[in-house]
Image (cartoon, rainbow, N blue to C red; front, side, top):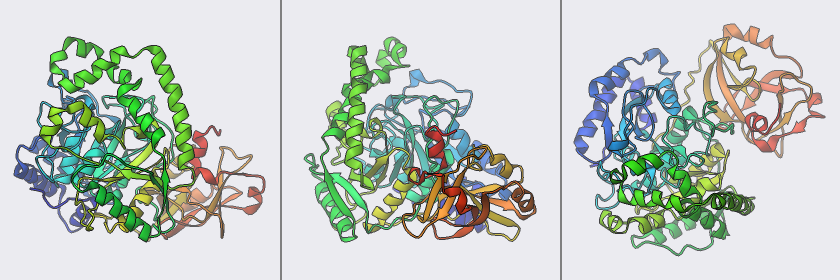
Length: 596
């Protein structure tokens, strides 16, 4: 049985109507009980502990905290202080003393943990059957695999237990379960979300992922957990995602699509794919066929090349001492690392750089790559009879993503007759790392063009009140930048991470300390620029204005959703010798590129 979906939007409405987080927690536990032993959870919090966390939320924070009172599930290879981390291997379990960084951010935003979810052991697999805790029961057909490795997180959302869940994604683990259960799976750019406190599968490729019922909900969660973590060596300063993706019309989009697909299943997948392409063409989307050889060659390296050795890092001693505790297909994959030589690793790294260059060329001039998430699925019995070969077939269009440094969003498939989630297909959009916000906008446009709709729209966390001024910042006042303190010290509160309307040029000014950008509105040739919007108490506006010096000033800025707020603008004379950095999309990308 699948319960009616809980979404961020529906919870906000219920809380505004007077319901409490305790009410919602009790409803979640009732839904858990109704599902019974479904293989989704490894550890569930005692209901008393979940109630206490809900009761501790301050109602005064409801409009300020973007995930206030929102329950969620967490893949059990991510640490929570006080709960065991098992990675679906009881003999490996340990008890962390502190939360993973992304968990800390979720709880600081008001989210409520319900429990830790099942997975393919050590996050090694795409099918969901490699766990001693059972096979999570797929929502469409319990005889079919649920997808993995983030199987429990995907089913927890699809079954209506929680509005969102956190998975991980190395080879497709954040997208395959979404495709096979009819929900959204968002895989951010590698390094955008901290991996500290997450047991690695391949540390250089791993990233946390988000399952939700809509792109809007997934983007809102990503905006909370994203950000540079100085204590994570693999964290990267990338353009910040936005809680509200920029509106993107389908008409005029250019999407690369595979020139040929030759591995279709027998459940209507090919007919569904062709119907989706037909609908997109009718909506004005230009489909650009591209050869997939470079993508597939990259993906093949994950399980048969140098990166197999990385999977063994941190598990070698455990595997030696506890071989019988490791699921046989997982043990077989990890054992393959012993044959990888040092020279093989460097040859693989060199070849991957060449493949990345090829792929950049193929995707140049298009908004995203559109491909099936999976082209076939299997019964549990079929997968268990041939676990390695069939698992590889599941990852044909997902294993290359992180190796090629792409971000991705998987959408539910649409049947040939237009029925939402008519077949276990899924459609994945992929783009270069750092384009997470733009890709979310493209995903929404594609979904809408296919006749889908959001199951949740996120209202702005801002309450427009007479005693606040909404202010958009684009440079040195962004969170983590040198002048951010000028906002914080005056009581400013973050409303949203978003972008301007696509009507601005962006410049790096010369001779400013600290370095600052300039924003200019143009009639033609403009772009959307990353901004953060803050609520600044009116009582503090005067003192804040005293810190703003020429050539900058405060004017009005149009945001991606069409609303207009106050924001930083620049006198034209200062732009004459400034460097045009519009193409970078924002100040963070410019700073990350080496500006000082």
